[in-house]
Amino acid sequence: MTSKKYHLILMYAIVISALCGVLFGWLYGAQAQKISWIGDGFLNILKALAIPLILFSLTSAVASLKDIRQIGPLGGSTLFYYFLTTALAVLTGLILVNLIEPGLGFAQIENEIPDKVLQKSEFTMNDILAGISANLFIILILISLSAGVLLSLFQKKAVKVIKIVETLNRLTMKILHWFLWSAPIGIFAIVASKFGKAGDAFWVELSKVALYSLTVIIALFIHAAFTLPLILHYYGKKNPFQYFKTLLPALGTAFSTASSSATLPVTIESVSEEEDVPKSVSSFVLPLGATVNMDGTALYEAVAAVFIAQAYGIDLTIFQQVIIFFTANLAAIGAAGIPEAGLVTMIIVLKAVNLPLEGIGLLISIDWFLDRFRTTVNVWGDSVGALAIAKYMKKKKNTCPHELL
Image (cartoon, rainbow, N blue to C red; front, side):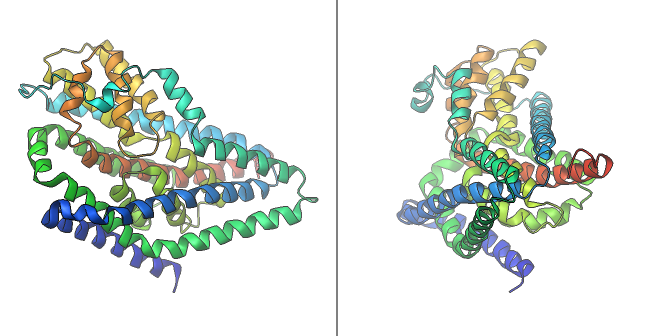
């Protein structure tokens, strides 16, 4: 079977299984939770596969470089792209929430801080930095870069080691390739059990904050369908619709699992189909993106903060909204690529402008649902970045051959 046919079949299977999961969960309710162990197992294996995938792919990619000075420009352009797109996402969210004003006249105010928020009520920027430094993906990236640089410096003496690492990388990709045939089953179980657990109460809660939810989804759509495709078209020189189609297996997995980390192996597998994205770029950009590039999360937190202010009748000054802009950007970086992590880091955004933490209670019941949309945008942003940065590096190589390979 050709690679394109494999991805096409996988794409349709994931989409169909997710839709069937929604229907199954809605029809069978709490009974659907009995298959949650299948989804949990699927997620755990995906997360486990991400570890050797990062380690071997990035190490072999860096080791194959003839000029390791290429790492500096690659890292710089990657971080610039992530900070830029996150800032644009937050700006989009702030503009939209101020235009729509979903919290204006909101009557159903929560007076108690949710338990999961109360436990983290002392969450500070130091916790964000500690979370980043302790993040497994960051550690793996640093180890892989160090190992790759050493192998590159001693390339002639380390030929056998480099070949072993490359073989292990191909083996890991092959295992992933086979394992993804089980994705439709795992995704069906995840979606069915989640919707089964939510039950009819979810629709009641969603109706209470329908305008807020719509504001978040529209803002995410604008960022995903206009801002990122413009970057892709201008820098990546790629038809956004074609690239979107290539990424559908990863985007479907992101929506189903609500986890950037668990989706990472599928994202790497999907991006590998794009010939214009070399392994040296995708192996660096995508794992780093799964850790620090949270466009959707940052947008969501900014919209949520302004919504809570509107719901409580608090008028935010321009200066306070500027503070929300910067804290949402910084807090999103510390939001680990796991479900509902953004809900906890929202504490920093609210505390920065003295907004009541009780307001999170207005959103907590539907957060898991919106989390799926913002995670999908996060993964789409990572993937767009991989191609745009690859094209930028290629252009820089052609214009500065003395600096880069």
